[in-house]
Image: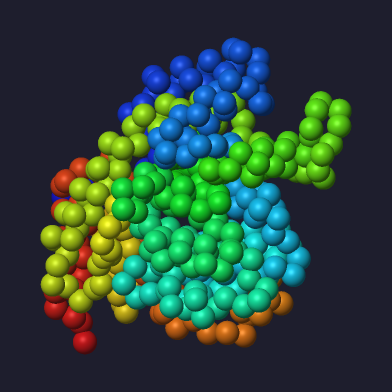
Length: 375
Ligand SMILES: *Cc1c(COP(=O)(O)O)cnc(C)c1O
């Protein structure tokens, strides 16, 4: 019997193959222009991504981590300031706060969405709190209305980590446009990914956007004079040219991700696993399709034997990371986050999958749970 075609967790080569001509043209165009940094493609992509999200200002930067750190710094956050964020997130969210010199204050996740638990956010506010940094984890927007209200009432800066949520909306509005700044990553595996690193800061405030732009370019005011002691965290022209091409396909890709998720929902119903829940008023873009099971290791192994790739996002939460043990959260426990770390398993959900690929993944999962167990 021929071995079935492998289904990896993600297949970036398939995406490239589908867009080969457009992408090759875009990259070659930049190569031939002789201009690689601070050029037209970056300006154009900034304008297009801002328009796509409905944001006033957009500044391309070198990564999602840079977007978060520079947005925090541009908002004036630094030593002595507490920033409340999600315990259940990719570690870069917490690193950005640390690199800005501020103190991360972590809040546990809610079971349903794996996003920030609102009640715990309110309880975590102290006299030193300067900002709230919600994360739209797995592509599902956090509950923005109460967070926006809380930030306004308490006079807190609101910065969104939208690194996993390109195209996601909350009450019809794109994530990254609710607070003082919205931060995106264009790491290759994200829903909108470059062929290298990239990021973006969105803002409704010109001053914040211009400060991020300066900070990303050494803090330069003119070619020779500094306004700020800045960094080199710019988005480059090749990445911007690639992202301009891919942005035109993003909504179609999102629809396919959502269709795959719906198909999984139908085919996996009734099994002893928790499936992702789409909360009300939100458009989930399924950066990751994350199920929960107490038998994760065995299921992942079984799927691998059947040629199906899976992932774990994330096995070690930030508060358990060794280099972060000198922060106040190190001694705390976050029961939901810790349970998620033990139980989550990401299934393939990328746009290039076919209906029959999803059927195969689902059938294998069903077989794992229904096969006769060896005693
Ligand atoms: C990917 C990611 C980041 C960091 O983005 P990079 O471009 O990899 O630096 C930050 N936060 C979240 C939630 C992410 O998924």
